[in-house]
Amino acid sequence: MNRYAAMAMTHWSRWAPTRVAAIPPAEREEFFTGLGIEVAEQITRTEEALLAAVDLSGLGYLQTTGRLRAIRRQAEELVLAEMVWIEPEPGTDPSEEIFLVPPAGDPLAAWADPDGMPLDKTHPLWAMQADEQISPQEFARHLRAWLASLPHEP
Image (cartoon, rainbow, N blue to C red; front, side, top):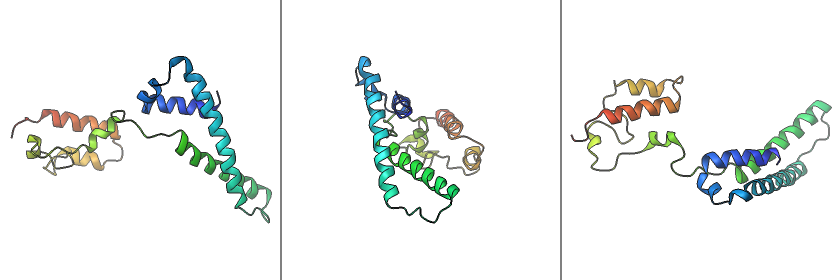
């Protein structure tokens, strides 16, 4: 199993568990090994296509090396985005809860704006939202705690 296969297996297991579960357990390693080989081959093809559009003449050794590495990384980025970094399945990203909008008629609407933030702009959650030192996960935890503390009837 190459490094691309390992990346895919790790990413898919975390963000697309249903998709991974659909692959019979006895065939998973073979599936991801094959995917890793396909990814490596596609990266090479993409790299060759990108190189065909670049003029390396007149560049010194270090400039040429830097340009070649940049092209390789660009090819990897393009192919990994297409074949490995698949979209997360619903429910796998805990930070998604931050962006839930209360449905119309929700009794929480008396305390929260449509984005789920307190109507009171002096509430500490507003300061936390602006604080770059607060991680999205920590903010989501505080937001959930605040929402849980609210009465469910206006």
